[in-house]
Image 1 (cartoon, helix red, strand yellow):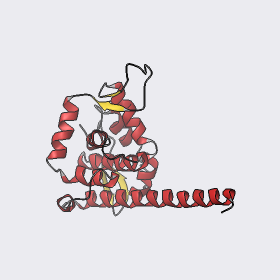
Image 2 (cartoon, helix red, strand yellow; image 1 turned 30 degrees about the vertical axis):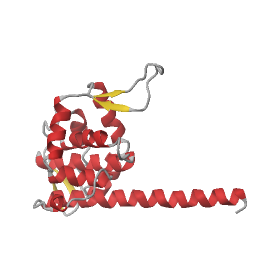
Image 3 (cartoon, one colour; image 1 turned 180 degrees about the vertical axis):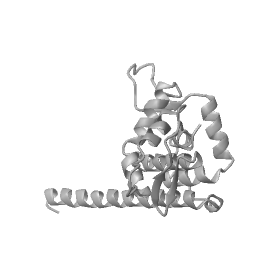
Length: 202
């Protein structure tokens, strides 16, 4: 199990009570992948620049983490954490959903009177789901901070007590990217509202 998979499962479990913006989740998943790659010593950070180590077999058991490792930019000037989040995060929540569906960990709910698939998803009872739930209920700080970035919960103070500077750098970049995305949403909403008012003659 990886932090990204745990995060996706936790947010999907919690989404019924508090919907999660897919863009926010994608950015957080990209950040979670970076945390996992740092833990696997696949890369280091030089300031906010991602410096890959020698290619390894990291993520062989997890296709998406393997894809993440394979997509690291290995030539200087290296990519910044922010650049990684926006590049890697594009559509990443959909990619995780597709993989978990293929594995049978997530199913599309059907009703007897609506035989076609719907957009409502349900998590299967699986070891992966139980692992993610255990990590979530234990208050593991990295997972808690990433989940807070998606809006699943408020940022808890104990989730900020991290001694690893590289992890703190990644989490701060995720929060900044999510806030930037929210600012874009708000600006678009204001522009669309103004446009509608023009057509209505207001």
